[in-house]
Image: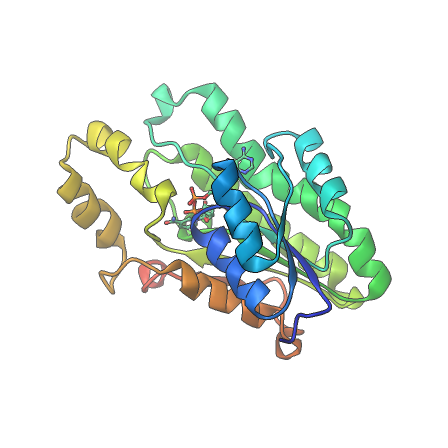
Length: 251
Ligand code: NAD
C-alpha cells in the first residue's frame, strides 16, 4: 500500500481505462477522486467499492475543470484520462466535434495540470500521467481531431516534464493501442459507414490489423504501468511516452 498518503484524481474514471487505473491506485491505498459521467447508482457503487469520492464535472470547458479541481482538493497524482473520439473524413468533420475533442482530450489536461502543479511543487512530489494513445505517435485516416489532440497531449507532457523536473514531479504519457472499451465500441458504426465495411471487417481489418499481437490491450495493463510510474523507482522516468500497443508503433 505504497500510496496510502496520496490523493489521486483520475479523469474519465467511470468507465474503461480510467476505471481500471482508479481501481489499481485505490488498491495501493490512494485516496481516489473519480470523475466522469454515468448512472448515479453505478457511480455510487464504484465510490463504495474503492472508498472513493466522485466529483461531477463536464471537462470540455476550463470552468468545468476548475470545478473538478475545487471539488477534489490538493492532488498528488493527476491522471489525465478523459477522452472522446469521432470518426469522419476531414471535409465532413463537424467543427463542434473538433472543438469538443480538442477541449476534452487536450485542453482539460492543461487546465488540470496548471491547477494541480502548485501543490505538487510546494510539497516536492507529484505525478502527472496522461493517457495519450498510439495516435499520439502515428496517424490513422478519419481521426483528425483525435490525432491532433493526442499529439498535442504528448507535447504538453514533455513541457511539463521539463518545467517540473527539479520539483520531484514527473509527467509521462501512456499510449495504448486499441483497448476494448465503450470508446472503441462506439466508433465501430461510423467506421463501418466511412469505410464501407462490416463490423467484423472493422474489428479485424482496421482495429486489430494495427496491432501485431492481434490482441486488444486490457485496461488493467495500462493501470499496472500507471501504478509503476507512481513508485519511487520511477522518479527518473520523466517526459516519456510509453507505448502499450502490441508493436503497432514499432513499424
Ligand atoms: P471510455 O469511453 O470507456 O471512458 C471515457 C471516460 O471519459 C468516461 O468516464 C466518460 O464519462 C468520461 N468523459 C467523457 N466525456 C467527458 C466530459 N465531457 N467530461 C468529463 N468526463 C468525460 O473510454 P476509454 O477507452 O477508457 O478511454 C480513456 C482514455 O484512453 C481516452 O483519453 C482515450 O482517448 C484513451 N485511449 C483509449 C484507447 C482505446 O482503444 N479504448 C486507446 C488509446 C487511448
